[in-house]
Amino acid sequence: MTNWQHFTLGTLPVSPWRNGGGETREIISYPPGKSDFDWRISIATIAQDGPFSAFPGIDRSITLLSGDGVHLQALPDIDHALTAIGAPFSFSGDIALSARLAGGVTTDFNVMTRRTACAARVIPVRESQQISHEKGGAIYVIRGEWQLPDGVVIGAGEGFVWSAPYAEKKHAQHCTVKANHPDGLLLWAAVTQQ
Image 1 (cartoon, one colour):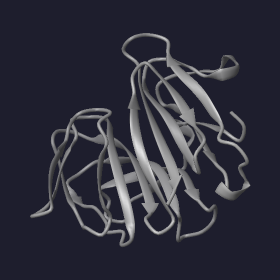
Image 2: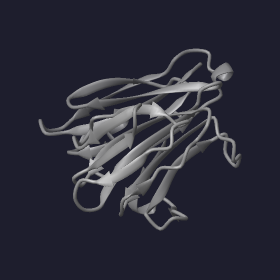
Image 3: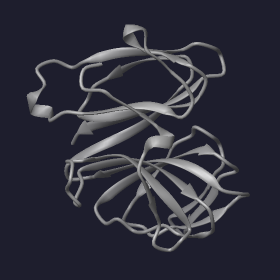
């Protein structure tokens, strides 16, 4: 778990949306300190219906963490009910979507990658998974307790994030995460070289 940084939902910095419809808690934006990120992982709270901002040149993935979810629409390209917790949905950031709440406030896990620099996949894990270091990424626990190497245990609302310049890595690094009970659910966002 070299270079992995622990985080909890409650300690992430909060940025309210300009339109007042929600807020974002950024887990990582890479490279650090640059507004033109190569990749970014965050957790967003959607409190009311409204548009998603367009991000030209960016590929996006959104996964419901809590709440009843949202209906995402940009006809004729996208008409998707994001209502299953832990089921990632990928789409192009070039498209400006509208989001309509299916019920109350929802919380979502978001991954954005600049398609000329890298790509990402978000993998729901229910039992155990070998996690590879890749170019970077994060794990985040939705449900249950999870066993990590070196006796580390994390629970709901906790995760780890890591980043490393791809050229500096001599060998791929791996570790295994394992649910401590059968109802566990964890997300792994793996950022890979394009």
